[in-house]
Image 1 (cartoon, helix red, strand yellow):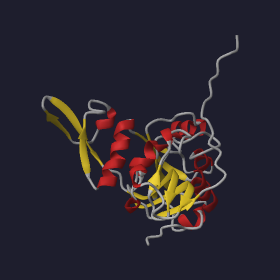
Image 2 (cartoon, one colour):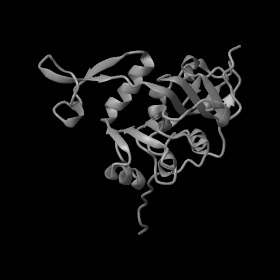
Image 3 (cartoon, rainbow, N blue to C red):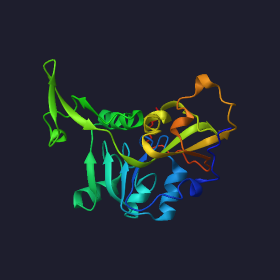
Image 4 (cartoon, rainbow, N blue to C red):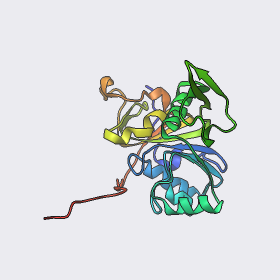
Length: 233
């Protein structure tokens, strides 16, 4: 029986080193691998290139790595609610590569599928296309985008089994699904880890072949990035 279970985040991320490229799943604060991020902070690895939709907030998510200056380059679709991210970007302390959100997702999915590059109309005629090959198809211009190359992909799922099969829940699926298998080594942390063979095959979103290591996380805060409520009449 295949068993990819490891004891904890420390064991799962034992070989993460300085100056590596890491994909991190999640969208805002939804579905982020909290335990893995905390372990990266503890390990104090530096010079990281992080690929993620955004960078959390100042005191949570990838914002914790930014606070300790562990990230040298951030590849994301927007700055979001992270003031420290914005400050480092504007001051030149942090190298930032902003990518259209759909393109970012497809560059992850292409890496997952083993596709080296693809053409997309997004960004043509803007600075996004500078230095890239462009081509016309059926009267429309497209930009050649290369798949990402990452040393690790770190994702978060609701439930998984010891063979690495993953099930996501609601919108927390987001970038986790396309990042699983998109790095040389994919690490999955889950809220509930069950024995192999106990998950319904029809419910599995990501097959275990994409996952190298899996562990059960704990103490998830599941913060809400912004909460807006209506005043009572």
